[in-house]
Amino acid sequence: MEVYAYCFMPSHVHFVFRSGDENPKGLIQDFKKHTAKKLIEAVQENPQESRKEWLLWMIEKVGAKNASVCKIQFWQHHNQPVEFWTNSVIQQKIAYIHNNPVVSGFVTDAVD
Image: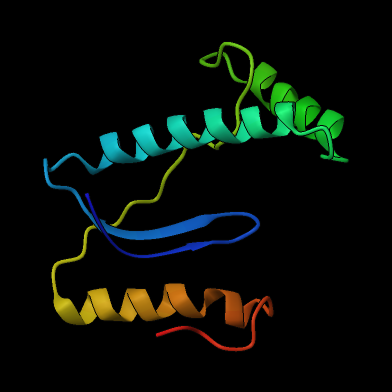
């Protein structure tokens, strides 16, 4: 996997990446599985996390609504992957991703 750009927002994540094995859906699935496990562990094990009970309750509540989930659900199950074919489109999407936190008011300037 080659990552060209990414941005973590409060409600979503953007990535521009290339899958070496031509399986982007598998990469997204693996990323979500690994990060969900690590983030939930971090919440559970951090004695200073003031929102621990609420966060764990929300994750369990969402998981209970989904029949395909055992107990908890961190990530939503829908993805919106888009395949890019030209360098100009790739550059346009990278600029959009890097400017997303600027437009949302989280930072004052994008990093190039």
